[in-house]
Image (cartoon, rainbow, N blue to C red; front, top):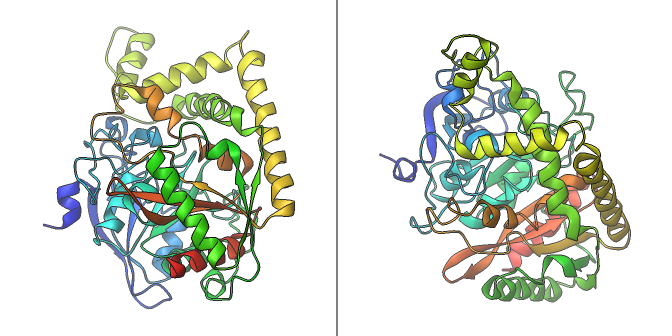
Amino acid sequence: MSASDDLNAFVTRCDLGGGDGPLDDLTVGVKDNISTEGVETTCGSKVLEGYEPPYDATAVERLKDAGARIVGKTNMDEFGMGTTTETSAHGATRNPVDTDHVPGGSSGGSAAAVASGDVDAALGTDTGGSVRCPAAFCGVVGLKPTYGLVSRYGLIAYANSLETVGPMARDVETTARVLDVIAGEDDRDGTCNAETDDYAAAVEQPTGDVTVAVPDELVGEGVDEGVRGTFDDALGTLRDEGATVREVSMPSLEKALAAYYVIAMGEASSNLARFDGVRYGPGGEGDGWNEAFADARARFGDEVKRRVMLGTYALSEGYYGDYYDKAQNARALVRRDFEAVLDEADVVASPTMPITPFEIGEALDDPLQMYLADANTTPVNLAGVPSVSVPAGRADDLPVGLQLTAGRFEEKKLLRVARGFEKAR
């Protein structure tokens, strides 16, 4: 039995790929919402129990072609909806650093498998922080690429306009090596239109003079004292390496969390409409269509039901303008603030998460507390820019992540700064 079995990091074990290629020395876990041909892919939900995709996602196909050995599908919050990997129909995943605590979410199984040493790298998906949050909570590296850099073909989406596939590993170099393979244009995904680059080679180049912007809105109220202290120490490390650190203001970030949840829940209500027992999922029972439909949808967990209902409300006639329209306007302001700040700075820095990992069960009783924990990660998804979480140290003996964010398609710069910090710690 591996460490990940005790942690409930995997939903399904498999043995795919392997052979010659640039990643032939790596074992990889794949999040359970990324399609793998012939291997059960459930999105952590009873609704897709037994579903075996007839094709590989592009990211999986490229991993196989590169010689990586895929050893399992990792546990996740149901349909990506959660920050703790406790909403999974397969049970909660535990944090390998302290098993009384959550690993973060929704890609918690991927982070736990990497942190425990059961795999060298893993794929997660990031809609509002779902790669960076578990990376921070488990003390590993997690990258959310620029929207459009990595193909979403084969991803069972939560929110199409926000979600990206991203790699996780114990160090920046391995993360960059996986990105080298999975990034790049894909004719099967109209949103993926970027050429790849040599990211692994870039991370070993000198960092050079770097300007780091620190938004007041991401380091003030709501950030735990221990997390803030660890973050300040990380800024000190960056200064010691020659970086210039500047405090800035990004006023739109105060609206970002609310805007994110309106947009994400609206898109989720639309995406999950297909799971009706006819197109996808087991058929429901009852007298007539409405009863059968309701019975099929009852298989969703409480958090998914909550988000679908809120999203449907926000998109409904009479409320669309009050909520969804305003959220999209706020999104434009967030994007504009990032562009303005990154015109003057190389990266934006903040704590990845304002808190240390929840105890198991703590956040389930208070969904609002779980939503508020995403305050530092969601703005990045609204802006569509790349962001990485790098281990920064510990507070109360639990991991804290440093979040670094760069401009669109500036992954080389971003990973180079992250690697410089990693080596200097």
